[in-house]
Length: 316
Image (cartoon, rainbow, N blue to C red; front, side):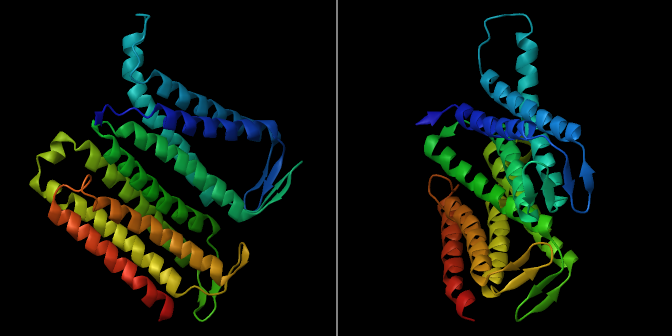
């Protein structure tokens, strides 16, 4: 069954989550001190929470107005033109705010709440980024398609966003690191590792969206039609190899900014990253997603190859 793509519930939930975060900040507005940045006045914190609350409400409003037949004539045409543009822009603004929060994450002392660890601040920024990018992605998926295919594509996009968010967290906590059996790693190296995941995740999201939209300009290009699924495959394989590397070198690690991390935690981080990558490859190989049997077979063989590499990464 083909359906016209409407994701009001998902868009509304994303907007609601963003608005709630802003409301919480407003409710607990107080002077804060961020390591490496300095003190921030209560009024500034209040304004930050208020603008996040407003952005969340606007996101929900745009989803409520999407594809609605407005009864009143005055301004209805203008709203129909503005909403499809405003929706993605609001999501992009929220995602950008999340990136800024994560990258400039530092141990925080919040008056009335207490100390907040650096990794918690980075995680908060990453999830704000994920919510913003998710709602923007929903707006850009316009093609009518089968409901099962749409759900599979949404899962793949969420997985790609997860890769980018994980990279953003690594960028946020980047600091001189000591890995047992490897030695010291410079802050820039840790940051670049996170940045590579962040970029690969963003490229993956863009590739899935373009695959769904199939812009007229690109669809006329035989090169784009041919390489598009293999491009997604290449990005996912790159992420998978990074995940396998992490799993292979999972050992006690000390990051100067957050302290010691157990080998099991590093292993879980690598495994999570691998799942996000191979899940996209598996979806790419599904008959209701793949364009033809050859591409589906290539994706599924790649999936099996990467899965077979897991025991080698754990043993060697």
